[in-house]
Length: 235
View 1 (tube, helix red, strand yellow):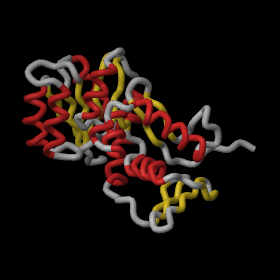
View 2 (cartoon, rainbow, N blue to C red):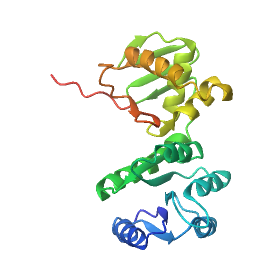
View 3 (cartoon, one colour):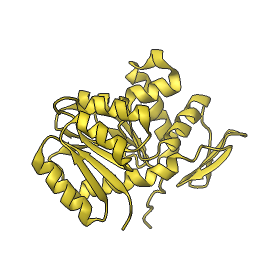
């Protein structure tokens, strides 16, 4: 038994039934709720390790639930959304969700997202120290030295700040607004083109093939996800 607890909040009984059965079969302890208010009460009582929530629900929406949970905890939140809800996905990520998956979805994909989110819990507790190595990257904040796959590269101060922020949130979906606010301040949250320029410059310096990035991944209409694992280089 893994001992990890998952709360599922969705107003579709079929969804909660399938998720309860599947997650229990993978040795997670599961509780379900059919609306946001009940979900929040269950969250306080159950103290789950991860939350899966729909966005469109009665009484309290998944968006509101994300905000309320973030006031209490940094537990990973995966939101379920229907195709085309880009604005709602972005709002959920800005409200504190860590990832999203679009309905209809495959259980293999959902299970992989759950495992990744749970792995990040321990990783996110580790602050970027003066000298840090994660995956393909090593960063020395004392000398402003960055190495990618063992090769030293030069980054501008803002590019370094962006890379460090990505490393701190490795594997997590980050909305444009979240990144802009964290790196450039709250007054810059609408300057998506500005962010695209910096991401493009960063890709040119750290990616083997900037036109097919393996590390700074685009989440269409939403933002970016950073993966620090080494590139697979074929002989």
